Amino acid sequence: MKSPRLLPVLLALLKFATGYGLASSAYELHRDEYLYLDYGRHLAWGYLEVPPLTALQSWLTLALGGSWFWVKFWPLLWGSLTIYLVGRAVQRLGGGPWAVALAGLGYLLSAYARLNFLFQPNAFEVLAFTAVGYCLICYGQQPAPRWLYAIGAVLGLALLNKYSALFFIAALLLALLLTPLRRVLATRHFWLAVGLALLLWLPNLAWQIGHGLPVLHHMALLRESQLVHVSAAGFWQGQLTMNALSLWVWVPGLLALLLSRRLRPYRVLGLVYVFGLLLLTLLHGKDYYALGYYPLLLAAGAAWWQQRLSSWPRLGWVLKPALLVLPLALSLRMLPLLFPIEPPDGMLAHWARYERVGALRWEDGQNHLLPQDYADMQGWRELADKTWAAYAALPPQARGRTLILAGNYGQAGAINYYNRRRNLPPANSFNGSYLLWQPPAPPGGWQYILLVEDDPTTGLEKHFQTLQTVGEVRNPYAREQGTRIRLGTHPDAAILAYAAALHRRELAAWGQF
Image (cartoon, rainbow, N blue to C red; front, side):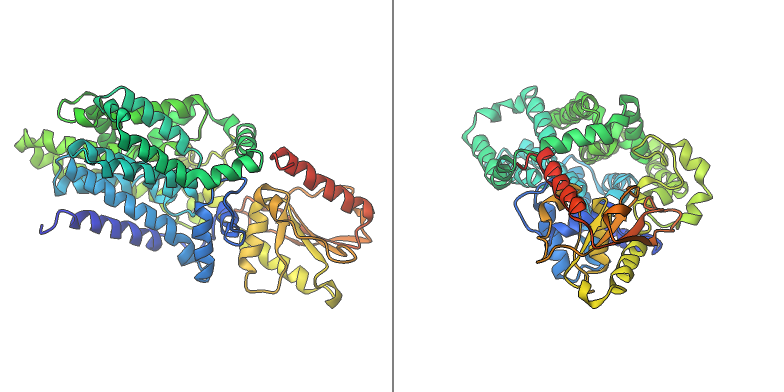
């Protein structure tokens, strides 16, 4: 091979192509993607859920037309860059083309397939953590200051992407203290790199402080609504499930980083995994929060296998092809869980198998018809089209005097996304960052309100001249099945005052007053 970088580049291209090619048209965008896309319409240095890096990608996506291709471009780009770094890490650890292919397959056929398909901050987080590990390998081989500055820049961007980067930074510092690399903590370049990371994060940190640290309320909401169902056993079961098809690569990689004499200079990578997973276990983090800690274990494991099998050439003739074929063969039965290639009807045919491995358990702790991410990609266009139809049927005097109020951010974001080329006023919500984007009431107040509710509030009839259901989500696979669209005309002063008070109360909970 003429260039050692060619195979990692080919893996990156394969990753990019499979993301687009192995996707059924039966699925729409994910609930969270609609929220993040609306960030692009409200650029700021912070949001109630995550820092602003995702918003920049959203702005570019919408500027390019907002098509499905461009929405998926970003997570697939970050995933492709991640697998490239994994391949280069294998080479820096002494692995050849076979080891690069082994680590690449481990990445392609793990939970990263779905993670790198969804436009969420998680894809960039995995890239950032992997890039830091790669820079540590490079620094261990050539202690040049540029690698420290690269780590500082990447961690600064990671903090602009997702606040869970703080846990990774804590694990990294603990790992550095327990290895010979702790001497770097006393260098001027290290502290300048720390300053670079803080400088990049500073605008968002200032936004957080200026808005009353809403991240604290967000973490409290996660603990109450989602993390309450996460147990230590479930978290670790998730680690095995998400990375099952590369178990024989990343486990030896972790052990080699911790115990092998040859990989001792890179022991910090193994300790980062140990401390990072320990923190996530203690804090009841979701299982996929840990995905950023595995790519470098795949690289170390593949390099270890190649070094080990070079000592046993006869065994290598058998094991080398077997270790490449085995994950491919095993993935055939799990492929619909890795890539959304099977439409919902086809997924039901394998319900019992998916239920056994825990793939159908949602954040409420119960099993459902589809994996939660897949159910979150159903029913949104139907909701948006029915909302538009209800608005288009209103009399001309309704223009400019109609409020669309959705029950959650997914509903509001989907209505805005699918109606982005229609003359529909933006949908709003008292959920998440939509609290910051409420439109001012027109002169004379709102005369029509379209209520989008998954759990319709009772007793509202007395506050409207008329209140009737004008649409409902029928898709049986959607989490939003049963969501109703109700049209209320001429709301009274009491209900408008209640809505204003509710808005103020929700903002106050986030520290906005």
